[in-house]
Length: 361
Image (cartoon, rainbow, N blue to C red; front, side, top):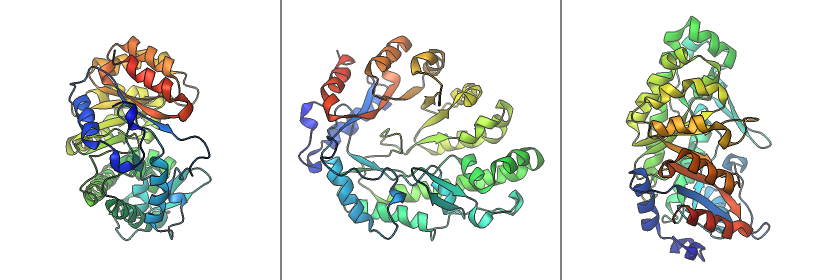
């Protein structure tokens, strides 16, 4: 795609070409990285929507909010593999608020608490998807409103969360750590029940919009097959042995049930689990995040090379560093395995297009 992608209207976007480009990359038929980097409009030229859609009062019709989102998206440019979309961001692990927990908006965050399960031991907690939950109904409302937009925007799946992370929203952290030792069978049962609720919600939400140009979630990776960026932030606090017992089996099952999947490896404390992750045949890729104070991607070449050696794809954030990302990709030597996500302001559009063209030469 070229410079004609700056759009006068969303109806002009070439979705067929865009989706074909993503599928070639997924199938390993491209020899270049995939770029999902939008160009944002000049500051103040159009109202920027809330990052968290839960920050809008639930009484405001979703259709009104979509008007604001579409107005912003129409002023962006979409070079490479970028595309007009909205991610239904209701906070990480919103499934917790759909199985009996409660969601809470902060200044710039959303978190979840046990709700009706407060004070209960794991053996008394039996989560099931509650379609009457205000959070479930709000996500559903947005999807129904999006269905009326005739495919002008792709809708990214809300962040349902990692299975054990959702369990951790219902069972406070210290209690959950003890329960891994004291009542492991109950934690496995809880994880299994959350797993089933997760896929019930995922399949239901994914079926609301037949014309959605594929599947994506918060990371923006677009796939014609059902896709998700899986995770388990809780595993930062457990050993590889416990990871193998309480996390890996459910991850394997999720990868098999999905058409495609990546894993969000967040922080140095999760690195001991990487070898087990790379052994999951159905897992398509890994997003490695060093975390606060973790340095630049170039400082973690051994991690990226290990992922590439397993022939897994790699998701990385641009963070405005064109030179650093180019050096990383060249050092790893497998450009076709990378997907780069981010955004740049309008004044850096030429720099972005030169960056993309560099890998197409």
